[in-house]
Image 1 (tube, rainbow, N blue to C red):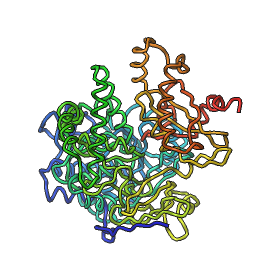
Image 2 (image 1 turned 180 degrees about the horizontal axis):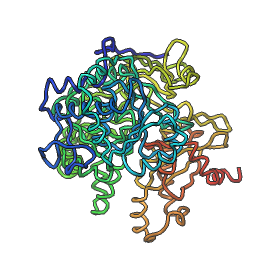
Image 3 (image 1 turned 60 degrees about the vertical axis):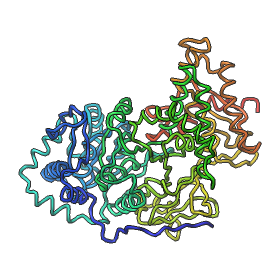
Image 4 (image 1 turned 45 degrees about the vertical axis):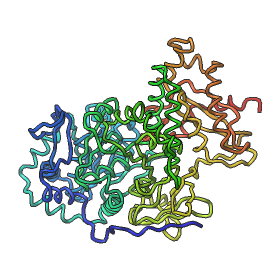
Length: 610
């Protein structure tokens, strides 16, 4: 049994409510820019008058005043200490505003992804016992209106785009500031801050109860080891959904560090936001980096420079690997790196605004080769690991202590243990107290001696770096008794520029096989250049040339595993997997049960005759 313990830098013994940070910032640096809102600002919430650099800055003092105004309105609406309030919206300033306003009066935020189905919305609001709900748009309000008969506890609904938050703040003018102060200072670290329903790849979402202390300990200890990222003057453009615990932690971290946060609700406009606001760091899930790499390759191909890109790719990876050796990169490699920095890597960094040299990556494994490519190209991806149940960060690679291919060492205050069956166990003040209204699930997720079962398989090296090797529930056991974790092989196959998603199958089957989807943009390019203009993938998925390309990716992946673990055959699905169809989580992880159920015929075809 392996175990590593890192002493906390900050403990939660004296922690209070998270909203205190807002009041502290307003006192310490009232003119510091906490947020930059888009210009022109939507009428959903009043904006300061000054405009800077195409955006509207919100100072620490202004944010405190905004939170106070909305908190007074929530008190006027009868929201009590411990009351749960749903929040369904894309990533935007009002999301953060509502979150802190609820925290400032001791209420509990219950996030709902804006892409959730009516059934998911109903379950979350009903299970949490929410007494109100903030929704972004008319479509969300209409969805909720159709559920109200089954949600008698939901007394009030506020639409952001309809200006309901402004009206709510107006209603609060009759409430004295002292009432908010009294409620805010009464909040303790043990109070519930939020109930986050795990999107999950299987089963019905469970409500993870996170206290103010859980989140406070996570962000303060993470910030303590990341001073070069989270500090006054730092900035980021946040485009991940705030309903996800990873993005939420960054929101709290930016407020805690008095750094500048730009919300980006529209994924299609992210690149323009990055160029405009020039963040000092970004955070993303690995799929974003896979897309960046694929698009860079495609641009090179369009310019008839694919061979040049291949060399640039190789140089970046070799340079990064050499950085981890005692001697470092040699003279010729350094020279080649300088040349390709001028003609290739700078262009890649320019798509992120030009100032960004660091990214925090979570949600799924990034992949060792991709990690080396981006570091070699001048963008260091700090891969971390955690769960919603752990607030969420447990481990993190640091600029001063990183090992590509791992998810880093535990942050201060976290203990990691590898059980005899290779499951990763965790302990510390960041670990949640349990699931809402679900004592059986809570009991099942802890060991008898109080360690959280993460459900992930992993190992620790001699220096305490954690490597995640798979999920306990995703282990495939073939009919011959071969056990394998599918993630590493899937990751390798997915590296091919044509491939969007890959999912291995083989439970109780004679061999391992794969379901593969083709990237829609890559397909359009490929079909045009191979003489099938505007051809439908549905009609061409058995095309011999296409299958030959995918077979190359499968063959390369097979070289990394034993013969019994190799993928014997594959099936190209007629379309890509999507979150809207319930096949991916909001962080783009495959919902395996949903895919297996939907594509039963395709899976059976893989084993026909055996």
